[in-house]
Structures are given as C-alpha cells and as structure tokens.
Length: 117
Image (tube, rainbow, N blue to C red; front, side, top):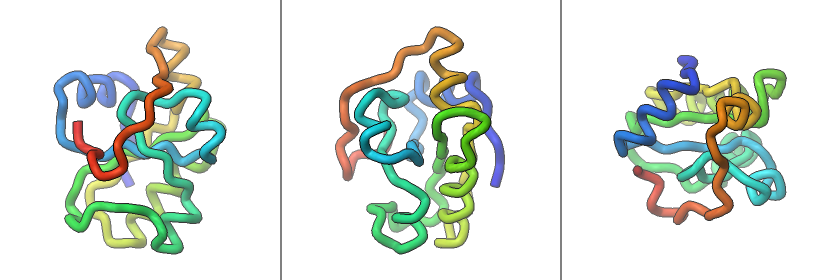
C-alpha cells in the first residue's frame, strides 16, 4: 500500500485522472459530506466481497477516512490488496486534512457504476 497526500489527490481529481476514490467510513458519515466523487465502502464490506469493485485489478484506487488518527483508510487499502488490487493508495489525512486546507466536501452521491473522474 502506498500513501498519497492531499496535494497529489487534489491534482488527480482536478486533472480528471481515471481512478476510484473510496471513503472507508459508514454511510451516515459519508452522507454528511465526502471528498467529491468518492464512493462509500467500509473495509468489512470489501473483505467480505460485497463491495461493487472494478474487474480490472490494476485500477488505481485511493482510500480515505476521517483523519490521520482513523485507521479505516489503511484497513480498506489492505482489504483491497487482499482482493488482488495492485495499485492502491491511502490518503491518511482524510476529511479533516481536506477541510483543513479549505477544500470543500460534497453532499452529492457518486454514481455507483461511474467511479472514474
């Protein structure tokens, strides 16, 4: 698992780079605001195979959660790697770091099948 910082994540989003962004927090947390374009998937669902994930195991994926103190971004990244995904990064600063930099969270739900920017 690689780590990714806020600036690199924002660059990927702004450039419309093709990747999957996953918020690894429960749905109620996701619904109160998430990084634009993110899908909500908790690590447990990924581990159990219940998550709607891309067939291509080389798809770039970035996970995040609430803050650097929250372990769920790492847990989700590890679960993805256990499922065979090879290009997984964790944005460990999460929503706290994102908002702390003055960046906005979205209330719009990403389309389930359209995970690419």
